[in-house]
Amino acid sequence: MDIVGKIEEVLEEYASTRERIVKEYGERAKALEWEEAQELLAERDERLGELEEEVVKKLEEVIGERGKVLWECVDSHEYASGMGFSHTAITLIVCDLWTDKPGTALRVWAQFRRSAVYGRYEYVLEDVWTEEVPIVDDEHTPFTAKLLEEIPWQYIRPIWARNIEKMIAELARAEWEGRLREKLGETVRELEGGAWIYDYQHVLAAVYRAAEALGIQV
Image (cartoon, rainbow, N blue to C red; front, top):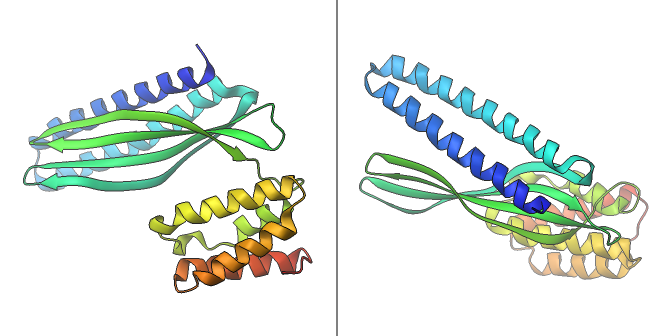
């Protein structure tokens, strides 16, 4: 089995264990008074946090020196809900795997479905996929690395985050290939053209701060 297949096995086990924990605590909470139930649910949330730490350790064991575990939730949205039911899609960046291609990693993504349908809870791994992404580090891509630090991510809305991430990936590729100045100019023009979007305003300001810090003329 290849490494992505092993990662998928770990994720399936995680989803199954998470579902079991939520169901068990939910059943126990039904028989309790409100305050006691809240204490039990707080205990459940602590256990789920421990489970995430456990899955990260398992992924690190599977990947070893062949990559880096990221385990970052990038989107969580309810896509169907009604009287007595709800379905939520949760998307995570699982890890980056190193490749033989200079400056490039294979990013592993996962999507889970969390459902509550008339009292029945499910947490299921729905999809795992990969994409090539540029590696960002202080040595080979100092501008992109600095830009990532300068962007105030807390103000970037999910609806625009994907576009911004694509811009950053293109900058990193250009920096690896020695085309940063040309690509930076294109990116600035794109951000200026979309300056009516305040998320882009934040990124444009971050571009200027990163460039100034590194003595790069924009």
